[in-house]
Length: 184
Image 1: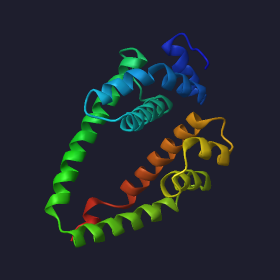
Image 2: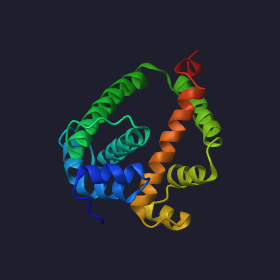
Image 3: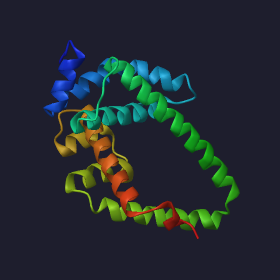
Image 4: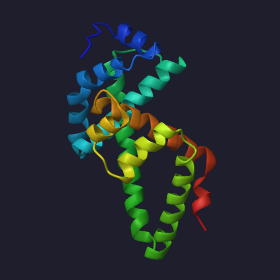
């Protein structure tokens, strides 16, 4: 693990596109973020997902010049994780209520439409992202297996790439479809 002693060094490395800065942030802050989610009714897997999403938010805002730092990076990431987890808990609450209110047939049809929409958008991604997401979601390969198949340095790199690809897919789905596309 490379050590960047100052937050400004980490930000500069990210602006240069150096993904080792993400690895550094991941390893440095992982335990704190997992504890946050686990203490608030989450699992370690959910914590990993939320933390990955927070790192992507940080990366994107840094690369786009939108990042305004008024605290340490770890404090910023903690805050993003808190907000993302709060939204996830709210979504789960609504999702659970929706599932009990709808009949099975309606759920099945809506699910098929959503799957088709996701597949359509998946096909719009580059080959690398298509492969990574297919390996992960459809073939259920581990991050280590994906790293080996794709020629990445390690599982952490595969995770980072997977989350970037997932963000790209999410963006495509949101641009191409609206929630009303799936309602009668």
